[in-house]
Length: 101
Image: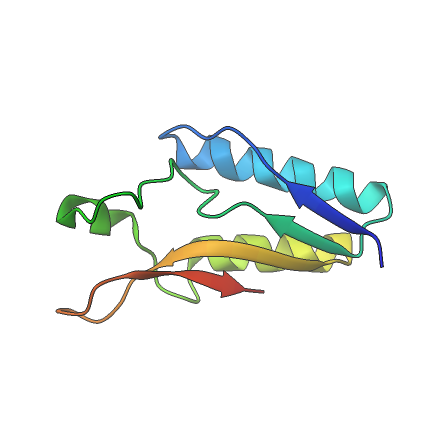
């Protein structure tokens, strides 16, 4: 099985980061990848060195907007996609990250 592994720079601009990931997914698929693995928390800047409550606003529901975007990318590119999304949890429960589509 041919695998594509994506490592990219990220900025605070989520839309820019997602666009960069989507372009890389397409490139991997065009080069024959059947499995594409994105880096941890690729939608934004990696912030997990410290637990900070103000960063919880970056979390999204699963399924949610980023989930659907990457699910569609997997379908369109005919790949299995491993992605890492910051999951919004119920009130009072700390968010967690990590999801596979």
